[in-house]
Image (cartoon, rainbow, N blue to C red; front, side):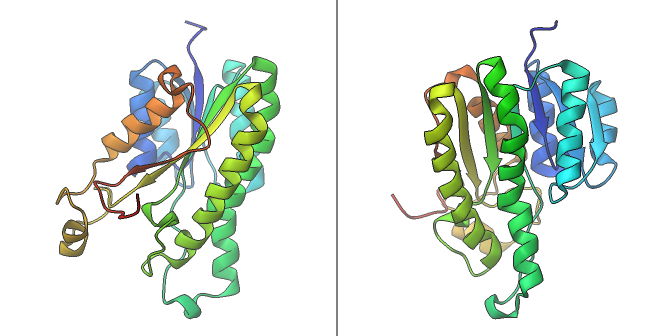
Length: 234
């Protein structure tokens, strides 16, 4: 079926990214997957899609996965910008290199991907970006100083982007996960989360699939919390 939509999913070798890839595949999406290890390539073979090894911090790798999607399918309808975790540690112990690495990982990856894919989506008449952010984007958490700081910046970029491209039927939204089961369970995580459990990667994947679908066609520029009630702001 050539009318099946096409999505790129980065950092899709494990955890949330792999769960999103499986969910989209089950819903009929054709996929181009990427991860720093061979895991995304292995998952691509399992699902019968395409994949490559590359990091979201490498502009050349981003260009390569876009080219792979276009060469394989001839279109790109969705992009899921998923990443690993930026460096962590005490606030003033983090080095300039740590902050620059975080900028490449959680903000510039989205900016660069948008530059690459927007012209394609404009020619097609639309498309959707979904960025995997963090619950700490608006309630900064000392456990994640770089992620908290820079993903607040990602929210700003997302709003600016959505304002600029909404009229062209190109949407962008962020998902703000809380503590998810791709990381170890701790008493602290359970105590802080009103649902008293970790989120499942499959729940984040289903949220991403919703934001990529026509069911969310009037949703853009938003930061959707999927955190079991963890954050307190209203």
